[in-house]
Length: 288
Length: 316
Image (cartoon, rainbow over all chains, first blue to last red; front, side):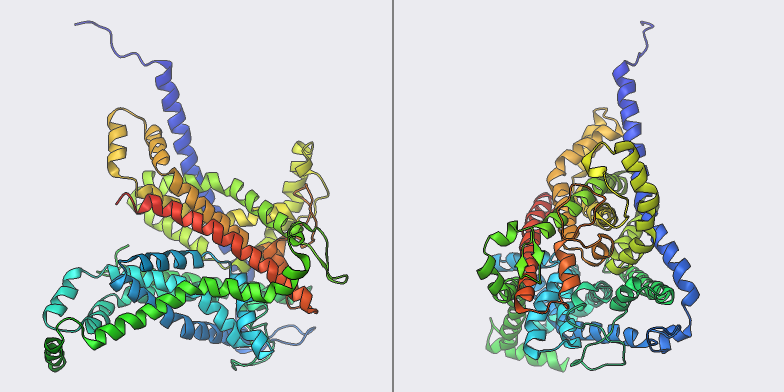
């Protein structure tokens, strides 16, 4: 038995060192990624919370020069826009998702899937320009409807792909069992498969609503914005996001503060929806 | 029960195709056709609306540097420059930490840490652009003006990109805010790509005595086209990003080497000037910029999807 034990060469130390350094950098990047989130959340809460009171939700915006007031019309406006967008976008997205999941093993479906993914990368401002051409120009004026159309374009890809994914998660035996009972395929799909995947589909809907409720760019020249009460689809309508934009640029401190409050409301809404999605996706069939 | 018995008899009369099934299939298919043709419709719509500008300026629109609505002279180069440069800065800054986070989430983090961190990254991706912009105006821009730009021009001022007066608002601010916005996208898609690399690769490399990092390098090598795809998706997002950039870039249509100088991007000129555009030619020129942006992002996104798909689908 020789006494020579393992003597590590300098390469051994080098690779140990490089490895440790790179891993440390990976840990560091995880921290770096979280820093902006913490900063933005913290700052928005800090600035926004002092103006967060009942007035903000139930009062109308005050005329220029007067302080106080709220954004009741903008909150309702955002709801109207989201509802309009959903009314147009959800049926299209959900039915396309059903098609892709249930009949989607052909070249055409692969192409649709690809186009949907590409559509999800189209800038939101471009959707606004398209809605301008499709709705504002023929109507000859800005309207909530035009804003809704822009939002529908933006929500379709998310709804389509999550609907498809969620329906695909439904075990095949469910379909077989239903078909074996003689239930027609369309009823199997609608009443058994879609119902089983329902929670997941709701997730997709919530995610897409979260996405469009925070959009500003497509609304600037479709829904335009409105300082007065309006729920008409035929008229320009205010929204939280456009209000933030206008109030952030304004030279009045009171308006800047209200912009922060609106941002806080928006962030709470988003995080709330994300948490809701988390809760929903913890269910039995929808494991990510 | 009643219903299913009924459909059973129906099925027996036409064993292969139930009328409802056929209707159902083709109804859903029509919607799939609508979604597929939406992109074409959007392109066509913008092409039609921008025809006056396309006819009048031709290819010169892409290289023209003058943007003067009063004299009806429209050139898109400053905006194309602004979009490309701000997105490039964003990627240069965001790429290393994004990949670091992806490696951390996919290879290093224990499960109890991975889920909450993934959730936080998703939250970051979900913050509306306008909130980033608000934060940019009131926090990031003053910080850049007082802390970042003086330091950069003091130490690296010999480079032309770090010269000029520290305004705060400018290309650097736009690049930084875009970096923050792009990071979660690149990170989460890269994580998915890394996770799709087969477990046997890790076992094999660790089994022959590789260090953790050497093993990760092999995995990165397997996943590189997917990570490139994720990067391109981030690029597409950065190019189309509107509100946050509009609020911090300074909005001046110039081509300047200095990152401290204000700039303008394609998306932000549309956002800023569309409602103020008075003449038809002005509107038409803005829509042509939208069309250009649309084509650019679509090309980037198509490449990105193909690359991501090539990794995450083929290996299953």
